[in-house]
Structures are given as structure tokens and as C-alpha cells.
Image (cartoon, rainbow, N blue to C red; front, side, top):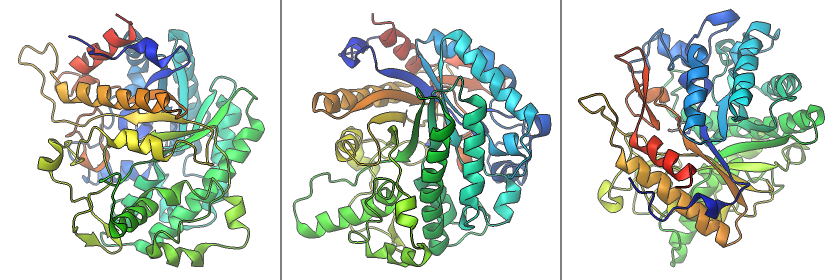
Length: 452
Ligand code: IFM
């Protein structure tokens, strides 16, 4: 197999190479050691997640050592995980669960032993069910409750964890809420989405400040976002330019502009104006926080600009497969240019000093070879290669981006899609004791990272 023109040395010695995952998607053990249920445990138990019942995740809770060894053997130097709020804080507001914390102590210590730098996300969507029932992100008190969690995590793990991310993809959190997926009330919850967006912006900044206050000076506090752009990337007619700006504002900029001191992009998107009723005096100042790095996660362009179906004020994705040759198993069009344009757009945003690709990857309907030896996942190799080429191009243009995390290390539970779409570099054979089998993409990374 060839790595084509991709040369690890071109990224420099300080570039971080990692893989990423999230607690609910990999851990399993939903009731172990005093863990309370999250909203996702609840959905799984109610049969709302295809193929996932009581046995969730991919047994990382028990097999993290084997997984870390495999990740390190592929040549990666970092492993991005997330902490489960209900594992650490039971129903959400404490008390702190020492047994839950001991699990992450073991995980982090083992990463350090095998040479993996831990990158840790505080919130990757698994809200305690109890907190959700009280109103979840719609309640204003959640801001301080979340900041308490973040501060406690920083205090407890900060002697070993130097790279932190407050949130994973607020766009997705509010998107799930918008269409009622996480609370089982299907419909269109636009006001709840706006309120949640504002609370998450305030919570991110408050958590960031409190974490920074207790972390050692060599630690960094970042966060991650869906940062993408609308295709076409350089429209020429004014109407299309306006429409493009409005969509990017609603789907991405509202989650990053307040941290950068820009407030909300009301000028670009009138659909956001109702949010003003949730903003209190002093909120815009409180939402400001300059992160050490911004995690950029771009799986494809946001939407196309042809006439498109609209649900309320949000346009849906109307890009056809034919237009972009292929799409992922969850319907995301694969476009070689989207990552580069996103890097360019967010290169010098005032919300962060620099960018890191905290997720990039491809979800496919992968099949194990008949002899069980591996998986031919050429599209995934193509995806990572072109993402990395985009990073190189962006760096040559002066974009400060200095890390790449493949989503995901191994196949796992893709939220509402269950075990269907596979994003891993490593295949998980659910029929055979969850055996881990490196796919061609894993071998491609191994060869590239070995520098041969
Ligand atoms: O699996 C998800 C992850 O949890 C968040 N970012 C997108 C991935 C693929 O859909």
C-alpha cells in the first residue's frame, strides 16, 4: 500500500497525531461502579438505538489497555476521550463518584504508560437523565452545574491531562434538541434550540475560566465545534452570498462568535433574532472566552445552495450523491474541498489562538473480508488523505493548525444510527467477542506515521 505524496515530516515535529472517541460510544458498562443513567442509556434501553441494548459501546471500560496498545502500535501519539458526566457525578449535581473517577484515573495512567497523550473532552453529549428531566440545557442553572463538573474534572485529572476540550460539537447538541431526538418529543423545537445555544455558550466560557483557574500553567483549555462551510465556497451573485452567510451563521457561527467577543450573528441571519429574549444584561461579556485552541470538525460541506427543503428556518442538506461522487453511511456528502475552506474561514477567529482537527473521518458500511483478515476501506483512506492534504495546504497559507485526530479509533455506537455506520480505523467484530481487527486505513496510518 502506498501513502501517496503524504509525508509525515511535512507536518513538523510539533504536530499532534491522534485518534478520538467518546464515552457513550465506546465504554459500555452503563451501570458499573455507581454510574447513573445518561439520556443515551435511556434511549438505548428503550430500543431507540438500532442494535444497541443493555450491552452498549465496544467494552472499552474493560478493554482500554488492549485498545491503547493498539493505538500506540499504529504510531499515534494522542488519544482523545470524553468523560461521562453521570459516571462522575451520578445524577448530575453530585456527589462526586470516586469509583467513576478511578476508572478514568486508570485509563489516563495507562495512556501515559504506553506513550499516548490524553486529550479529554468534558461533555460529549451524555447528560445525566435526571438533569435532562429537569430541563437539561434549557434551564439556566445548568451553566453553573456544568461549570462545577468541569472545574472538578480539571482539579482531579489536571496533574496528568494537559489538553482539555470543554464541549464536543454544540451544533450537534442543539441539532438533536431541535428535532426532538434526544427527548423523544419529535417536532420542531426552535426556541429550545436558541435557548440551549445561549446557555451552552455561557457554560463553555464559565467552565473555561474555572478550569483555567485550577489547572497548571502548562495545560490548555480548548473546545470543539462543527466548523464547516456552504458549497459553493466562493459564490459570486449577491443573493447566494447572503444565503450562504445566513446558513453558516445559524449552523456554526452562533456557537463560536460569542466566545470571540463578536456577539451573535444577527445581521447575517434574521432567523436568530428571537434569541434576544434569552440574553440578559452582561451575558455577551460573560460568553467571551479565548480558548487555547479550537477543535475543528468538518465531515463535509454544510448544505448546497440550490432550492432546498426547509424545516422552519433551517435549510436541510440537499446535496446529491451525484454532485459529490459519494456520501457517507449517514448521508454526508464527501467533498475534498470542504475541510480546506473551513480551515481558511476560521483561521484567525478571535475565539481561539489556533486550530486542531479534533475529528475527521468517514462512516461506511464496512465488511470484514471472508477470511476475517481485514477490511478494504479505500474511501476512508481517501478521506483522511485529503483531509491531511487540506491541513498541509492551509499551513502553507499561514493557517495555525497543528493536530489531526482520526474519528474514530474503532467502530462504535453512532448515536441514533446505532452500530450500522462504521467510522473506525479498526473493525469491531460484534459477532466474535468484539474482536478488534485493523482495517486498511489503520495500516495506512501506521505506514505513514512510521515515516516509511
Ligand atoms: O460519532 C460522531 C461523534 O460523536 C461526533 N462527531 C461526528 C461523529 C460522526 O458522526
